[in-house]
Length: 349
Image (cartoon, rainbow, N blue to C red):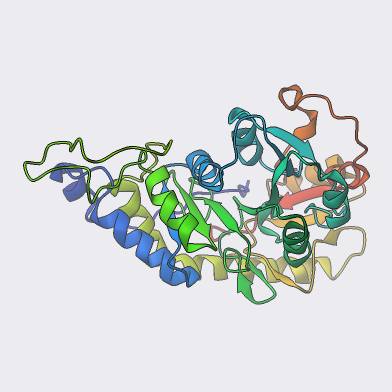
């Protein structure tokens, strides 16, 4: 059976040396990895974190979003994309999705805005970018920051620009084992605003300004105040080294996924019952190859019989009682969830 996901791991000849060096926390390789990412995305306002969860926490605290505030999000997302907001004490309010793409429907987002809404979380489902311009316009109109949830979207493009460079206020990426790029664990936060980026450096590191934290004896300086709530969210030197090694192959890996997508395109040209997800404005990374099927379960079984581990990937999150009961019709979610099937589309095929 060809798996839906398979973590890629490059050769890591310097790993033993790092493990024996005593320099395991945030260090030289992590800094090099950050610089490599900044070059990749063409921005200086980027930080890496030790997990995707802490990436979201750093973003929220930097934006000043607090316990009891509300965010609008899509229930068609990985639980790792939505539960961090709930565990931060926020109210997650669901908006509907486009039934043909699984991404937020701008009209529905607009209808869900309330005075307590402090952010819109825009998930780009399974690597397929959503309606970025439309959602960003809504954010500007109402003065609400947009968080692009790129959990599965590293390297995907919207109107010729990489996700993370499309003018959105904040973008977060996951660097866990089955994502691009795999650091075993980690996250990325990209800010549009320089001041927010500089604040995030403190938030990521327990509110500490490392340039003033220790005195001339190397002791913690009483003159260095801690005025911000923060997290121990810096990435280790080990994860940074793995990420740096991954970045040397990232373009080739994504191109292999796109080549496999072209093979699937050719396959589906010969039939009309299964519809590949397509939009002219987007260039997905093809983390998976998404199709829409009238018979979801039957289609999953059919492709598994053919040797491909097909899957629906994510449960619609509004089914989980942890998020509370919300009396809102989501016809786009109903239709998309009942028809979406993901096929393997990886470098391992």
